[in-house]
Image (cartoon, rainbow, N blue to C red; front, side, top):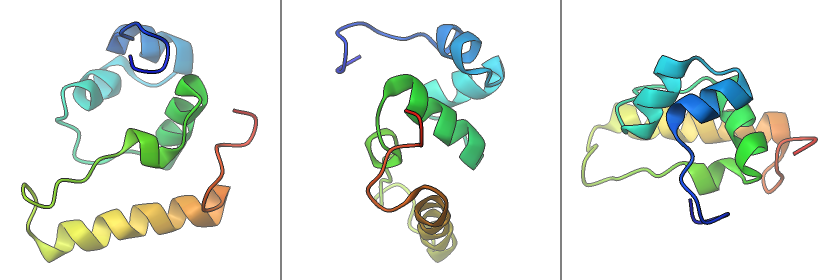
Length: 91
């Protein structure tokens, strides 16, 4: 919404990216418990942004060490696949 001044609904994003509509709805509602890297890459391509611009981790809400380790692992895998400061190739 901030990038082009309009809201992108989950069904619109699903249709444009090929991500399952239920996945887009759960992400939009902040209910997703995990995100496949391929879906994250598609979202970055669609929104022309980096993973860091899409993801937000609230340490107040998630206090477990397991969550912190999992989020660091996701970022590390993204950096190994696409580079630390780069957008998805072709985005």
